[in-house]
Length: 268
Image (cartoon, rainbow, N blue to C red; front, side):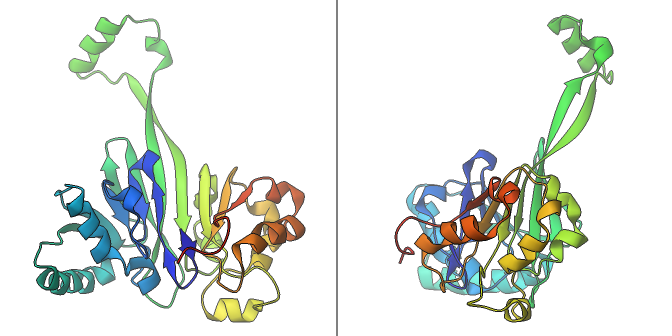
């Protein structure tokens, strides 16, 4: 769920990740990794509830939390206070990152911290999968022989990177200029807080958010096959969002764009 200024949390079970925790998603309580974009309440405010829900479901392993390095100490101090209130340990494994850092979530999945543009320390994330392929000259070998050579230390494989998902929220659109590689991802989850004249472009930029006008102007460069727009302002009813995109986006971009909004009213 994502409603600009109120709550944002996205669960991606295929990657065993949840992005931000402005609301506690019960369905994500078994997840292994939380990636925080920044410390504003609508993105981190439900962390205590989320950790409590994990405990209720019997998940006692500390949650791995990736976040901007600058907020680690404050977040841990806040959790220490919440632990005293809860009378139960709210344990996490904090991982502080700076733009450009790469952290391996598992042996075949890495996350790269992306510089975003917001008034507080913030990050986006690019998740890429490493795919190992047998070198062409070894394709005819039987399985046991491949296993033997691999055990002997022979270099049998080449590795390629497949960029799976980029998550970019609470940022100026300049993030796409600073880190154009995010558009190579198979899925780009991008904030689009304001969609029309109800909020001016200047006002959107003053708050360090993206206006749909800016994406329309860049339509030809938004090359990702799947663009997911989220963090829509509560200026808009969910039922308005898709018709606005239908009317305003160029057809080629519209065909690759989805709106991350509910049917019916905003939850809560």
